[in-house]
Amino acid sequence: MTDRQLLLTAVKAADDKRAEDIVVLNMEGISLVSDYFIICHGNSDKQVQAIAREMKEKADEFGYGVKRMEGFDEARWILVDMGDVVAHVFHRDERSYYNLERLWGDAPHENVQSELNS
Image (cartoon, rainbow, N blue to C red):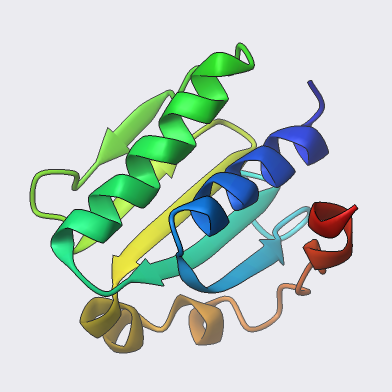
């Protein structure tokens, strides 16, 4: 599985759990941590946990183990580290507070919607 396939798998997993406002930032050349950031949010603690759990399960299913998952119990901001793809799953209130899209404003947005629909 390529990084792109892992990215699409994780985005689809988030979408399947009704994550809202899914944004993908291309971090190549910007961050040494990963090539892609996925940023999304849920409207309740349970939904935030369900999104992160689905991402982990789908990554595991395709042989891409999650290296680290932080913040799961609190369900305010869950970081799902899949190596070259890192997902930030926020509770709606926390997302607007941290505003990662603005923090990483120089990162280009990736349009993955057309690939998900095909």
